[in-house]
Length: 149
Image 1 (cartoon, helix red, strand yellow):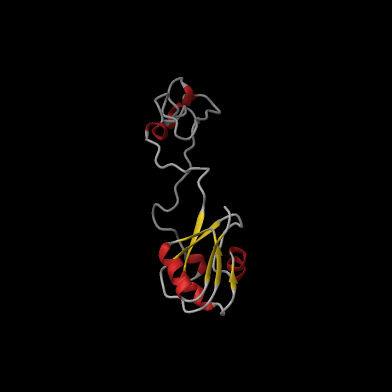
Image 2 (image 1 turned 60 degrees about the vertical axis):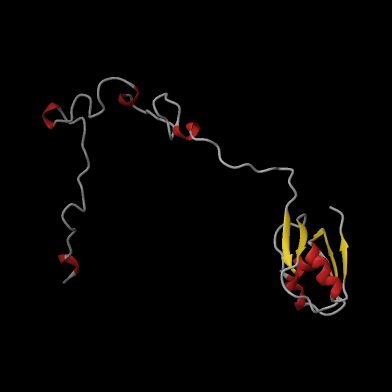
């Protein structure tokens, strides 16, 4: 096979519809736009989703969900993650963000959950602690300090 022997498959290329080329063409006079009305005029435009004046589908469907703007956003971490740090380390949200343990904006609050086992003596400063996390940190000889929100 050579380059000059290549051909498109049948139906791959379609001829352009030529309208307004006389009555004998079958596409004369109104040029396939029908008689009068919005769609027969040149430069007609319809908004996306326009349904001829009927209430649009997007407006008929119910709204789903609700997001409180005033709600406090919290990032949760488990105490099992804190085993990576050395004894006596003071753990704060800024420290965790520095180390890549938590991501997101600086105003996010941190809550420590009790999943995992802690074997290091750490001073953990966070906005909230679960009961099991508090017990586990204090059992390992560490301290829990609650930060202001």
